[in-house]
Image (cartoon, rainbow, N blue to C red):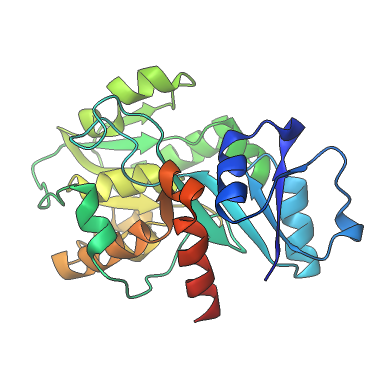
Length: 268
């Protein structure tokens, strides 16, 4: 399998890391021609939606890069909360099925899976930002109003809306986990929000129209908002180990580890 690494203006630092770690060089997106390239495409970011949807339409294989699920918040391993980890997905935007994996990569993250919290009162809606709304053709205000209305049909609990701050520096210090103290359940569109909620011990409901990385350990039926499913610790651990194999540190992009693991996985 040969890969073409598409870099906008030839300035995408993460695509460049991945390309060079794979023994290749990036290709400028602006001069690249879809019809004249038979390789597997590597793209980063959901705003490459025209290319992604074209690949789906033509059943053309591609690799999608975006922010990692875990390890990018301030932690023992990452005190400043830098965006070190990037997910890479084959033919989709998210890893939405659990594949049996070794625990080694998950354990290196040194993230503790918290026990379920069952004393929270409110429902927290973690709203999507503009980019996934554009990709899926969703009106954000309409999505929020419909989601609130559905929740209100099944509970009297207070509902709080949390909008994603566009400034990543603010998000690092004011992350989702800091807002979960009095939360009964999180309702969200986004995989990362759902992942953070589950790891923090708060059940999550995911209502995205397509793949969601946390779906194997989340609820999807808002009529169950009062009595959410709480997956057991073994399933959550298997899921966490799986996700850890779907994301890579920048050093792993650059030194070829990401390419090696992906090729081993895709050839299995």
